[in-house]
Length: 618
Image 1 (cartoon, helix red, strand yellow):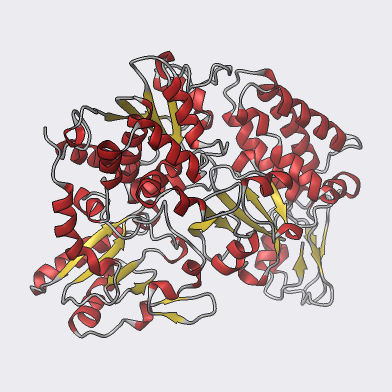
Image 2: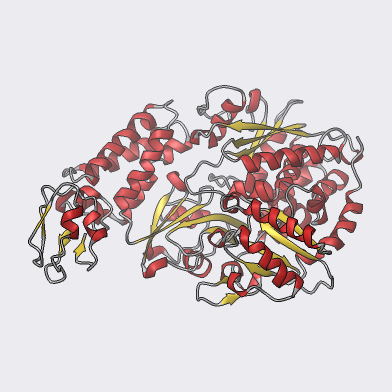
């Protein structure tokens, strides 16, 4: 079928949607935007949408539309409702709040103050852009998330959607497209940081009539949800980028490999693909040219190793997901042994913007060797948990304190984990390190796909290393001995250390084994699996030594090393601790200080929880 006139749709729809981005827009219409990403969905945002629409219909209110969107980013404040064009930001909205918002805000023109978002300093925020969370961000990959309805292709088109594909097919050669991406400096956002333009050029140079484009949406890092949020909030940007990549290398078919645990993302991809086909933006003779391209979805079962590109290929082909030996690389022999490019979601989401705005525009953002922006899933011990996009080179301190709002409960920053199970822990002495590929590598960490977990002083770094090794051991595909057996032996040593059974020489054994695994594992996941251990040994070696020599965990996280004590000066002898102890480890007379028998104590912490005088400490 002929491609629909996207210019006509854009011009008509743009006027209607101007109030989404222009606070000075002169209109009587209002749009109530409700986050319908996974996080807010779990807090009943679909019911909020339903209630708003029902109330508006019952009251016969005109010129008000309720729009489902993707993630706004500030997940800590969800469910989020934003009313445009005045840009009012309501936080922690509940379904039962809908009527008050309609009656007070929409009908009476007054803001519901009790629902207005508060910044970290307690100040009420009346407009989205007034939040400190957004001030240092620059949204490129996330540009449309929280702005458009991801299930309506017309809204994507209104914000210049598919204009990049049209430009490429009407006025650019394959080489010109690849050169533009190369000049922009865009690197893969999935972890490896390989130059996207170079990858595309390798595949284009390969002979053959059949080539493939694959979007790697198998996001398996604990705490990471960057790709999921883009797919939920702006799926068409990925489809458009895949079609551009297909044109550039000479491919006519693409696959999106997405984990089945992302049901909202999968459903929105299906809708976006169907709508794009109906508009002639996927399929045969796109924009009246001789270029044809279509996309199918392949669901992954949640194996972490399938995030590695060659294991992903095996899975798409219907086999067990295990890495292939390289070379040959996928650009030469990939899917079904045909030339294939594999880019992750965030990488692709940047492509249409680069095509429309130019390589120089994109390369002017970031640092000399790390261009553009990076999306991070900011989590852990930080006030503003959520999704952030910042220019490369933004410091860790700016992300944690200026954007993230700092550490809650008056605690101190201890470390940040970047790169997930393959990354490393960054201590507070490196808080001012710029977040880019080279700087993170230099301090023993890595960019990874974009998980950023903040930890305060209550975290034990030995226990953290054990946590990530536990994940790696359970997710190892088992193909190579260094990863399959080596990580298990490391995990066993870490377990012994956390249980107070560590021995002299364990640290040296951990380092030796870690280095062997790094050098001899088949794939990148195995080669980087020891990174959490190596980075914590590098910066927190004294904690390992305390666990082994002093049988002490300064954070109190390792229960086997914990010791609960009763302060005789604070103890009133009420007997609550004694009565609630499950193993009768506490003795003492009424109105006299009590004592804990350390040999009997099972470290459950019940006594400390029950003590009304805070006389028990760990």
